[in-house]
Image 1 (cartoon, one colour):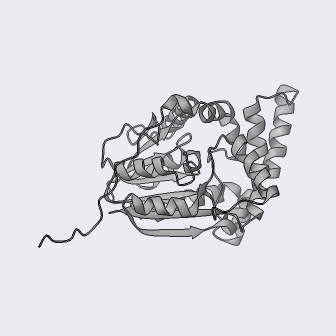
Image 2 (cartoon, rainbow, N blue to C red):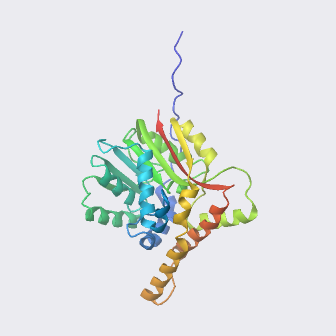
Image 3 (cartoon, one colour):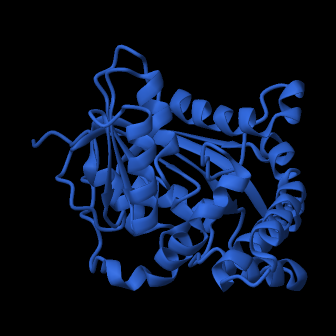
Length: 306
């Protein structure tokens, strides 16, 4: 008798891969509005923060850096690891630089489709003298140029939402393909909690946000978990951290006020490209979205590849 296989075969990445040219709206959004993120974080942390203790609420940048640390913890990285890390949707590489600074044997490859992010990111990498351990590449995380089994770790901090489909299948398939067996990943992002019809008011906010942030949709936590299992991920951990995120979200109105004052002082007007206005609208509406916790939550998901 033939022995039973210990694990089901992992499916190949689904075809077709979407060409980079089809991501024009996302690329334009970040090329135009990308510099404005410095108003949110001088270090260009392009995500929300993680509140670990009460005193953190008084320091936005501390909470943003806490999120970076939380992602690294989920990856189970140690300073002694010769890790090969993929930052899938890296922004200007701030989380990648954090990883390199805290894990001296790690090599980090950041993936982005934005020319601005690559140029700005390389400037910051040179400033921190990390050129030998952090590189940024213009690539599509739903169709990576990297070979199979290229990385020991991968993460996506508020970038998987830019992937297509409620289950983010192309993104997950590519992440699974480039991870080595036993490799770990972490996703930190917002997700819909169910696949039911959304209430009218919530749906109106939701549709406006995905338009402003150039998102196809937020992922469905159910569909994403199904695809993680489909593509060979095991020991999956799912943590909703909405309450941990909320204190950093509370900084949005203050940041918007600073932004408007700066624009009026610098340019004597608020005439801006639509992408820059969208970058103001979306986080403000995101505060309302986060109040509907029956339908939406912020999660950290981690697992390892079989």
